[in-house]
Amino acid sequence: MRKIKNHVKELFNDIPASEQKELMMQDIIQNLEEKVSDLMFSGKNEEDAINKTIVEFGDIEDIKNELGTNPVPLKNRFSLHLGFSLWGSGLFIALFIFINFYYTPDTIWFVYPVFAVAWWPLSMFYKWLAMK
Image (cartoon, rainbow, N blue to C red; front, side, top):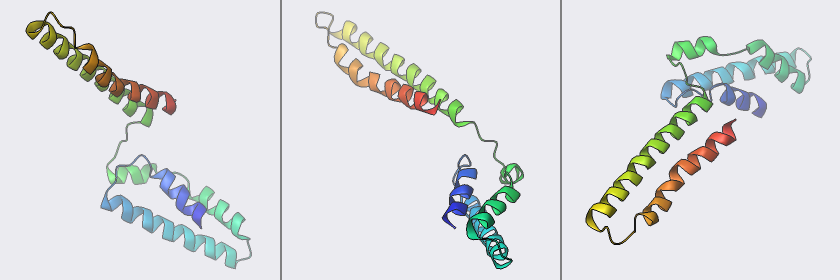
């Protein structure tokens, strides 16, 4: 029945965690496992019963609407994070440049914190690439 649990978890993957989501998932898993048991009792082997149950269950668009979620696709969420990290890093770098040239124009030190700040958008960029 692990296949049933994994399938349901995958269907609910883009819905934010909540108690209502967990209860709904448990209820669906229980109902699907009961259906598999009924199909096995009527003579189907376990794998066929699981596959038939998954196919007949279909998608959960109605359940998503009931939970009141219109999830942003995963790729779009990470592109938002990438844009935010680029803007945020740019502002931090501009601040470091301003402080450096305003208070200590003879010493160029802003480059060092820039390397640390640059990891933020770089990590988000690689996460975004992995989602494609």
